[in-house]
Image (tube, rainbow, N blue to C red; front, side):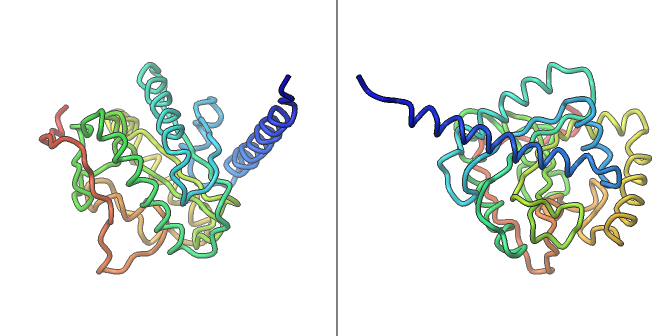
Length: 242
């Protein structure tokens, strides 16, 4: 008879560690001064889903991450309520500067995009060209606006202990625009960000004025920077009216 007690114990310890990391993240967002009211609303409504992965530079968890996000997409699409978000929290590495996080973020997003492109088209409501003002990251034909967090971020609101990628469905921003709530929420977030961080993120742009890729990692890019993401999804025609 094979003794499996060690394996069971090891799995249990990893689960305890993951739950502890998620708790830290939720407490970080639950700070009353935290500027993103959308994230706090998702947390309050229990619409914020979290997964803990191993190393941000390693592809070992890519399939599990993708399935986690696919399940999130299904749940989001079946909900009539707003403010949903999904976060991937990586245990490693110990990020020491914004350039390292930025490089690892685009590496993981490229891997997820490549896997997704094998089975799905790009969300036709947005553009697949990262340089386009209409671009959004797409998984399972659902567009996402991303927020990166890590301990070396120059933005206090993104300075979390572990490297993290928060996926926010783009469709919910469009719904807010339809109800005239978006501009009000944007103003509140920017005022809170000034109070929390001392200034508004210099990379922050209004939707439709510049590609949103400049906002994902929180790093301040120079004018020569070009997004390294190359989408492999089937070519489709962008249709903003869909």
